[in-house]
Length: 244
Image (cartoon, rainbow, N blue to C red; front, side, top):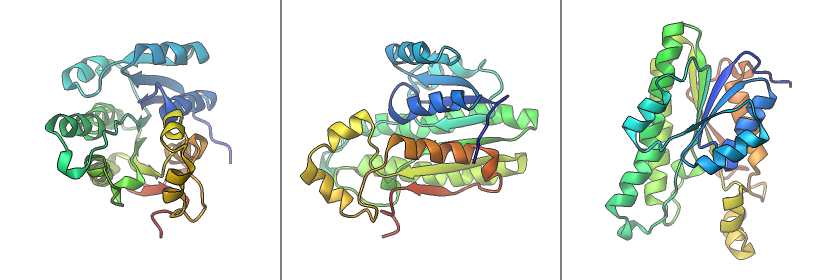
């Protein structure tokens, strides 16, 4: 199944590393004009060196005012992926106000704000669009030391459904992907211990973690015209973890 985004403008947040970076490059290969957003200039410089057609935007999405200023003149966007997130893991009884507020600012508030900015333009143009929010299996399953992270991803899932409901009349589709542990550079560092990995892979019917490509391909499908009748769904990319 060939997917083309020729003539489309895509915006990807959290595009400096991991899933976001690979997705930005994949969208560019599929013909999209890509705007990559992240807070680390060095990551953007490296990304543009790899693909000169990508437009970099450096901003901390936790800052509402700075985000508004950075994106207000971004131009028409057809495809949006809200991928930026942080994971500050603490036992429930040790969760701090700072960690709670930072997590919700990046993982939830930024999804709402960036989507508002983009969707207003989509609505005004009347051309529809597709938004994918990157959630997690943690939105639907309790994980130790993940109280705040699970809460933010649960919020993203239901926010996505409300967005799908309210934006559907304008032919704007909104979905999530919900990966298990993904073998990004950070994922490999965090789950390289075979004994620790087994505690999770033993609960995944396919017996393995997701590769970045697995998540990227799922997002590309949801962004594309191949999924024209799909909106408001949470798509597990988890090897069957949530099903069992």
